[in-house]
Length: 112
Length: 120
Image 1 (tube, each protein chain N blue to C red):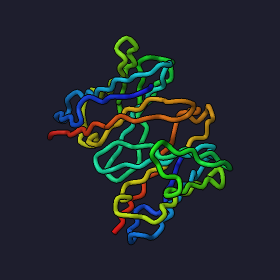
Image 2 (cartoon, each protein chain N blue to C red; image 1 turned 180 degrees about the vertical axis):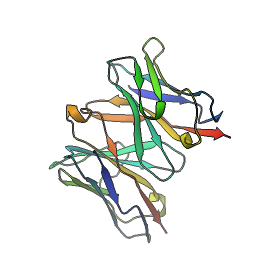
Image 3 (cartoon, chains in turn blue, brown; image 1 turned 120 degrees about the vertical axis):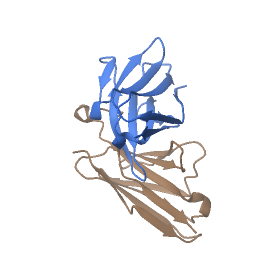
Image 4 (cartoon, each protein chain N blue to C red; image 1 turned 90 degrees about the horizontal axis):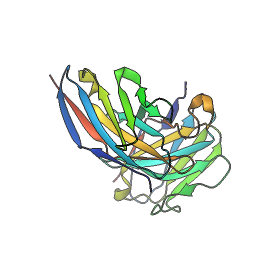
């Protein structure tokens, strides 16, 4: 069965520092993988997605993620954190024909 | 493009009453819509999947008689919480998918802003 695990429910980085949010997946078939961001009391916004093309995926706001099949990982990175990046981040994996399931989320805190 | 709206954005109702939440795709036709529930500081849990013109498919553990879903058109789905109780208080989020390759294919879902339901 497909599943997704996000390591670290809270991550704190200083403004300008590297952001690294970890996501590992389990899937019996080649997966599609997603990273979403959620600001307080709002819906989800797609940051980027992996759909079996390039393994290094670039998204909005300078975020990127690399699909590593050998490690079953899809970690999200950003070279330089900005205060506006403070939010909840969800990794997601496809399940079945059209559904996706979400990880438990990682709250990113940006320290001034 | 690909905007999904929800109405209302928040609602407070008394225990025992029913509440309807609307989800609309504003600039595309949504062949599939999804309803999620999110408790504070938790992840999204899929409640049901609905396809236009057919009955919704509910996830295990979701009471279909309590959470009525209607996907009447390619741009509108509604979730009705019947006989609401305080434990139904939550953040309800819908998403929509067109299934078209130009819009990300089957798996790309566009999310609404959510509806905060508080049952007193």
